[in-house]
Length: 359
Image (tube, rainbow, N blue to C red; front, side):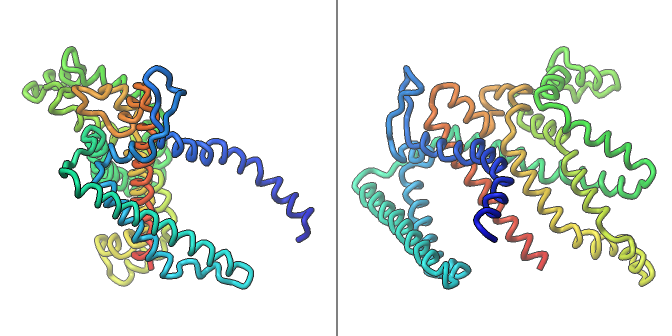
């Protein structure tokens, strides 16, 4: 392929690459740059370089130093295991060696910083003081995610199994079950806020009218608000998992079930020996999408509970939004990077587990 053909081929890719760079790559590096700064209280655009202080404030100095040490050791081990051997052809051998040296240097820098930080800490009184408000917001996000991984995905899976069996009426159920995700989070949040408010709440009135008035309560109060938010999110979001799981079920060849029936396998055996193994990649995909989607919710809690009462439903992304509103640009950027790193780590770990199970 000559240079002219390469340029022609690249011209087809360039528009998509430019859009991706503008909306994803450039903002990522800009966010990282902001996380190393602190905005002035009077002017958000007046940034002062503070290095990794924002990250230290989020983790505490001790935890941040320990994480830096772990990262440094991991990078050095990764480099010495020669993970760049795939690039070790004649032309790319120098590139592999360069990447190995850079990785060792980066790991060494993190390790030296960690050792220096601990030597400095040892001269002072130990005081672990992470940002508990931030970590509590992360905990709330993962509490809602736990509901999503269990109740939401189990509901989606059961409905997908039912619709997969309903050959004639299945298409109508698909539209009905996928209708909620199409509606905006804010619209559903405002509607549920009216329905679940203590007085005059539509849901409480319904309970009283059918003789279950003893169950009526303030569903958005301090005791129930987070669970109500979690169930509301599951109710709204099960449609995504339903559609993906249904598509996965319909890719399983019917001949497998027929052969199993001939061999005398009952419904339970067919489900555990055919359906589940064939759906393993799809199930892990749904789990990953559930984690990514649930941890990043913001519209529903803003509309339904507005982060209250007393911050009991302030999830991680809402906390980042509040810090941005309060002109803590650098701190919010650091929080966003930490949350992104947690999600990326979880996603890659689950993908690796999925590949091992499949193999």
